[in-house]
Amino acid sequence: METENLFKLIHTVEAITNRAIVDWNDIFPHNIGVSPILVLSELERNGPQNQMKLADLLGFTGGAMTNIASKLVKLELAIRTFNDSDRRQVLLKVTPKGSSLLQEAQRLGKQQHIEMFQVLDEDEIAQYLFINEKLLKSLKTKKSNR
Image 1 (tube, rainbow, N blue to C red):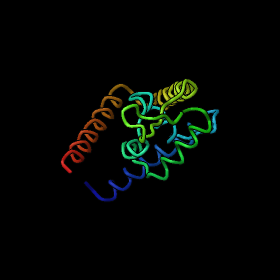
Image 2: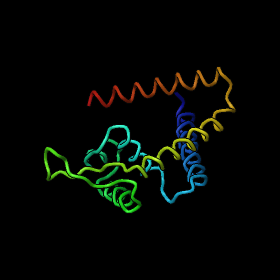
Image 3: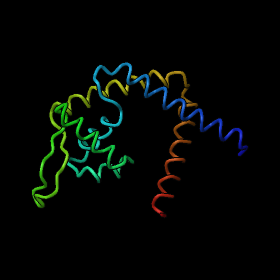
Image 4: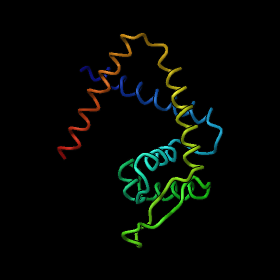
């Protein structure tokens, strides 16, 4: 692949992602960003979890995860609870208020993606999906080989 095209591709992918995040923040009526929503989503999907496990899973630093968890607790979107099998371990757990906010965020996110991808025809969508699945498979393979 030509280096110039590779860097143009990287820049374009980053620009699309950044623009989508900015647009989502503009339409989401709550004072909370994408990273805390990702944490709520993980908690909703897999139940209460240790903050450091969450940080590792989502690619956050320990400090960033502490700040995110504190904000979620302060906004009553999550609570800190103890692990029943090891009371020394504190887990983060989504609250009903957090679940409701997550559903709203996901609804707006789906709406935003539909609007963004409507400029593509069916063939372009199929091609884009194929490329993304290929890249994701490659990334997962590289991670499992480490």
